[in-house]
Amino acid sequence: QIDFIFPTHDDLVLFLSKNACEIKAEIICSPYKTAVLCRNKALFYEEIRCLPFCPTVYVSARDLTEDVFLKPVAGQGGQGTAHLALKEVQEKHFSEEFIVMEYLPYDEYTIDCFTDKTGTLLFHGARKRKRTLGGICVRSEIAAIEELSLIAHELNTRIKFRGPWFFQAKYDKNWNPKVLEISAIS
Image (cartoon, one colour):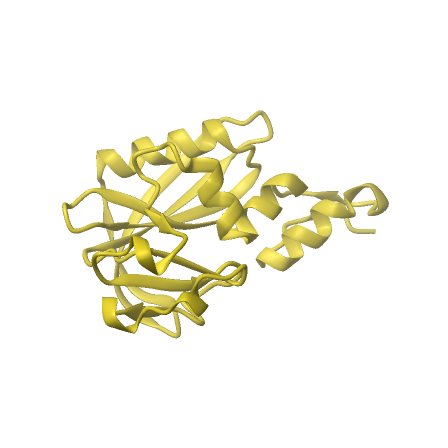
């Protein structure tokens, strides 16, 4: 006799959105296609590759001229990530399991969002990540940054969200914001 379910983990959003027709309660989350896109960073970067806030993703060590950031295609909380100096990068890092992307050295933000069932972005608020433990932000400060607001609206226009979601952005060497990852939960 459950009326509504708000999933609180990426894997739950994936499972519940895929099986929503078989569950008698209303699942309040983004659709399955969005859950897949949010869970797979390679698919997400492909979706936003033409946008200015998409980080550069490399396909070969031959393309590199500077340090990079290595992260799993599916993962969260900074687990399995590494900042690699140019001389440390090897062809084995370029696989279906990992993404090799530009290293983003400056400030990092989490932008919490909420989209209603009609697709309207009702809320977005940025928090500067001041301290993290195990990839989880444990101290932050609220920030109002117009360019992060514009990214929230653009993502909400391109991707079908419902309920809480967030994205993380970090600034590149030229102080341009780039989206690190996205999640269909908050």
